[in-house]
Length: 231
Image 1 (cartoon, rainbow, N blue to C red):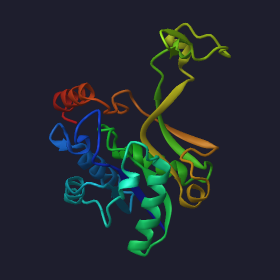
Image 2 (image 1 turned 180 degrees about the horizontal axis):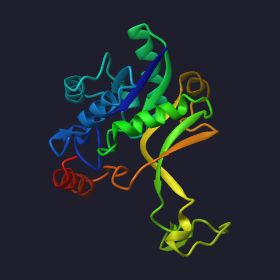
Image 3 (image 1 turned 60 degrees about the vertical axis):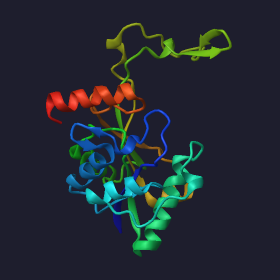
């Protein structure tokens, strides 16, 4: 029974062209994700799920396994992460002739994820207290200040908040997903097709660790941080 990291890295990206092989510091995003998983010392197999040959070659260069390419119908903008993971798990098991027990999802768009964070999340899951474990970071904005656009006007998205929060120091009990790491059991995922299953444990991340690359500006900021701090 193996621990498998899955790194989803399709070739198409509208926000940042060829995003997953773009560099932050001196290393590509997919290379960072692969190296981080291997450096955690707790992952037995690192699988990169991609439809792109250049991403496959870059992933293999850093030590990942890419025994198959992702089909086109799971590589467009409409493909769900759940379907992508289902395909990755089942095809990996069939091609490698092994059975996975624990799955770790690490998105390549979090360049500052640390090996310690992956190790901490997996060990927390292995306590048996949680059906899934996720990484979280502080909430930057007051929740009731989220608005929804409707034509040429906006309305509050949270119409009747349970608590009105006015100061940041009153939000210490709140958090959001940082997308760095998700850990869950293989059997439960294949049965329910859900990443986050209750009871859900968590590991905490800093705002730098939680930086996510969605557009060119994010990439420029991440590259600046990587070079300034040598990370």
